[in-house]
Structure formats: C-alpha cells, structure tokens
Image 1: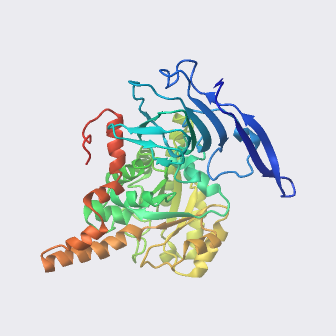
Image 2: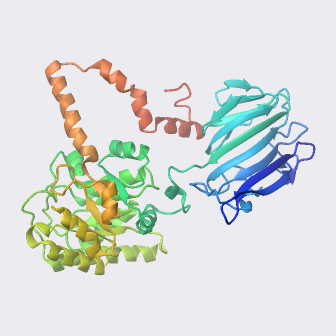
Image 3: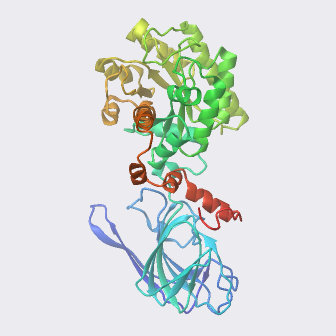
Length: 481
C-alpha cells in the first residue's frame, strides 16, 4: 500500500466498552488515504492524481463481532474480495477523468452502498448506459460489471458486504466441504438442524432460496418424481445417486442428507453406494435394516434383515468412507446415519440396542424410524447420548407432530421434513390438473398474479446465468431475455 499525498485525511473515532460494560472512546486517529495499486499503475493512470482509499472499518465474518479489537481497523486487503468475508466501510477518492479515457469495467463480488460526499460521478454499465450522481446521492450496487468515474474531484463514502454468505455457517471455514459443514453443525451446542424434503432441482432451488442450512433428499419423493412409483424399493442406486448428486451440485456449500435405502445389496454393494454418494459430494446418507425390497418407513408390515446383516451394512459404509478419507488425505467425507425400522416388530429396547451396535460399527448419527408416542421421542435422545439423533417428521405419518423447537428441547440434532415439497405437489398440482380437465382452460389471471415466466426462471437463477454468460464473453443474452 502506498500513501496518497494531497487528499483529505479522515479523523476516525471508535467507541467500545470497558470491563464493566460502560461505553468508552476506544480508539481515535487520523487516517491517510492509500492506494492499493503500484505508483503510476492505478485504474486512473490517465489522470494526474491516483485513486485513494481510506479504510474506516472492516469486520471479519458474519454475524459481526461487536466486541472486535483494533486489529479489525488495519488497512490491509483494501481491494475488496481479497480478504475474509465481512463488511467494509471506506472512503474512496476518485480522480477526475479525462476526455477519451478508456472505460475500465470491473466486477465486485459484493453488495455495495455508496454516498457521494463531494463532486459528481458517473456509473457506466457494460452496455454503455450511464447515470450521473451528485453530492448527497446514494447508490446500491449489486454484483455486476460497472465503471465508476469522477467528472470533478469526488469524495465517495462506500460500504460493502464483501462475498456475503447466506448464513454465518456457510463462510465459517473457507473451502469446507458439505460433509465437514454438516459435522460442524452437529457439534454446535443447542442447535437443531432443519432439513426440508426435496426431490428434484426445482424443489431444491426453492429450499435454497429460503436460506435453509441443510436439505434432505427424500427417497419417496425420488421414486415418485423419477419413476412415478411408490416408495416400495423400486428406485435403484443409480436413480438415487444421480438425483442426490444433481441436488448437491446446485450449492456445494449447503449440506444434503440423502436417503440411501438399504445400500442396495451386501457389503460390497453398500461400499460402492457410499463411494458413489461421496463422489457426488453428498454430505450425509442413511442406511436402514429393511430387506432390499423395502418400503416407506411409515407403512405397515416392514420386513427386516438379521441384526448382523444390518451391522455389516454399517461396517461396510464406514470402511468405504475411511478408505476414501485416506486416499484423499482427509478431504473426502460423508456422515453415516444408521436407521432402524425394527421398532414396530421388535419393540423399543431392541431398536435402541440395534442403534447402539450400529454406532459402534461406525455410524455417526442414529435414526429411530416410526416412533409412535411422545414417550419414545422423549427417551431416544437420552438413551443414545452422546450420539446425535435424527427425527423424521413425515406429514400424515405415524410419529406425533413435533415442532422444530420442541424437537430441539427433546435433544434431537437433525429433523427432516420429507413431505415438505411432495405433499403440496399432490394437493395443488392434482387440483390444477383436475381444473384443466374440467374447465378445458387455465386461469390466466391467476397465473399472472403468481408471476411471469421470467419471474419463475429467476427463481431458478436466470439472472446468474445471464451474468455468467456475459462475464465469459458470451453474447446469447446481449439483448436481454
């Protein structure tokens, strides 16, 4: 960083608290503008004066640590996007531009708020459209390619949320895999992970757009959407892996827990299943103790395999995971969830015994399927402690309705809601089909109230596709969409 002489300095005053909680003046100093560019090589090289930046404050991460120390005020990483994610407040001095000066288009991976303190400035978009702002004007710049230039000496006050994540967990450790992130969630005291059930790209996008920290790929939804069949063991490993991999690929930072049924065979087949799920980047999977021709856990008369066959599935999953962990120097991972469906036929104590043995065989999380009483729900977490326990909240199922907050008080670490997407499809799409058949037309007015075709595509990240195409030099959307 190089100091820029001749530009106004800024007096910065920072308040804080002492050990008794009383507000104090914690820090005060005069700040000199710096340029992050080498001498005579700034973006404004054609002008006589260089670009100057005065860093007022910078946080490290979300949520903001309001007890942050003075080291957060240092003038490092002035180029936004190069430091850790966080909020930046800075003053930018833009030198006047000259006639014929080339447009310098740039992209900030951030959400910027700017206030023009002095002079005037232009904002030029990549299609040539421009606006002029004067003193006191405010702009909000969402990620995009722009050029900001001064017509007269300009003092610009600017704050931005650099690389702002959707939630604090998603930026906690840069480069963290989805499985590692899921493990982090499981270790957080007092946290219960809510996982809405999704089964295709559309339902996954809708869940991701709402900011859920974890998703659940339902086996019943996968069988219904990919095969048009009930959840009675017809979906193959290929069906499930392909669907899970597609869903996880939509956002590699949001963990996906996926149904893996019985593992689709003996120990070798289970190991192959685990390797395929890990290769797809899936964060977690659950394996159960039904026969291969299994059925939904909330149907009656389920058939079970012997306990030792079940435990061999868990061992095979654990062995396959550890093998890939070694090969990847610790990077490859997946959370193994042991599910038992034996509660109906063998009783509570036998089910707890099976899960304890599955944990010893290598499972990370326990899943007692088909609980029918609040007493069972209240006991299971205590009886399996300290192992995390998953609760399956199937709408219309046999388990008592329990809210996420109540599940947390009972000690559950994960709650999956498999029917979140599937139930409304049966109801609302079924009704729409019936209306079309009977009325021989669709209600265009209602459809328009719900949004245009483009509005729906924007839910699926149309604007991101357009920006990506333009950034890569494509022209497919040069005239819009």
